[in-house]
Length: 363
Image 1 (spheres, rainbow, N blue to C red):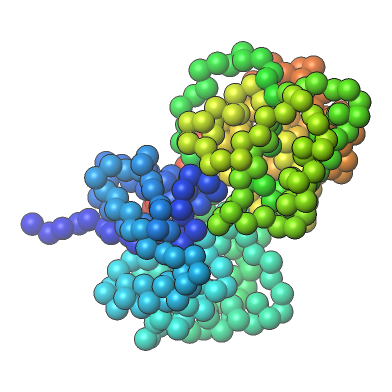
Image 2: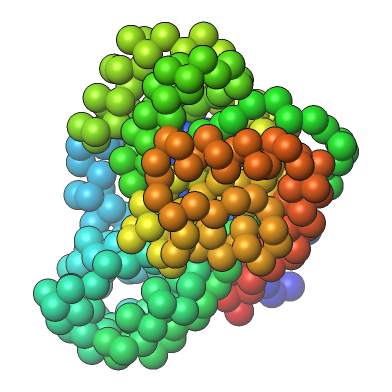
């Protein structure tokens, strides 16, 4: 009998624990294969785990060491390419293209290597390099979450470019549609481009005004326990602010504890408008799936989602006064905003199903 099983090697060096959306991204793709004929080998960090992925069809290779991960990736790519394996780089960047080029002894064959670029900031040097790689390896399959990302690569000569929705973490329908407001929430890794310092400024503003709204902050680092300077300074200032109605979550949360944060929350996303003009946030998808309205900035991908479903409030600047005012508007009409967020979550669960990406990997 002919074996029709498709085997895909997913390369994600930053996959180490439950922090970051690289984990939910990979787990969503693997989970979409449940009951099908696709098997995965996920190459992650030395402590990588994916307990919720497709049982029996997934192996996790605890492989990458932080300091030498690029060297390891080169030799892994060379081995997988030589063995005729199908490869998916789930968080691709320019360095991954370079490693592929160096590892390949010939042009990469069709339907062998797939790269998902979550975002791209092109400049003249990068574009010239992309054109060179496209000429050398025209059969690479390039994917991205938005047209603006994919169009960069198509313009550089890549033949196989696809807009593929960012895979959302599958969630059953929220069982408590009338849940009251509980707290303001900053979820996910604390980073400069996610506006963490603006949320800390909001804490100081609320303290000065004698506010007592409950606030929960997730303060884990994005990867490898590293913070940028602005975020580190903001974290150090929190104790001196003295805001008593504050709950900090510095540790990495389990999947269920992470989603529990969103129940009854208003999710604060004062993300940098330039960085997130067309960059998708997995936090947004998770928040809306759990019925959490958003406060976010204009001219971002998140703002367009909020406006489409009336699932929150969009502000022009991340000033603490504007953040507090927006949160107050949502609290005053929380049942309506929560209902709209739940409606958005249902729609986005369908639009961002990982089955779209899985279809390309296994076709």
